[in-house]
Image (cartoon, rainbow, N blue to C red):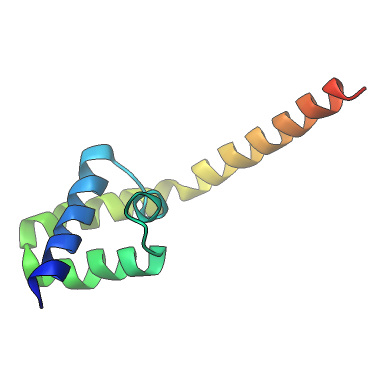
Length: 90
């Protein structure tokens, strides 16, 4: 693995851990696709740094376990915004 890719993967992992972000949020920050981020963090990182990989795996599992809660919150916000916008236009 070349040094640029190695640095990129470590940077992504550190950003995700320091800010407790999701793969989607990291992808927006670094300007790569979520697929690339996920592959880097699940496949490439284990060949670079085992302890960092374990931390990332734990955060990915946590994010997976609460995704239904985040989805529900976003749906609730969506309909509250729709209701608010309808009241403004009446």
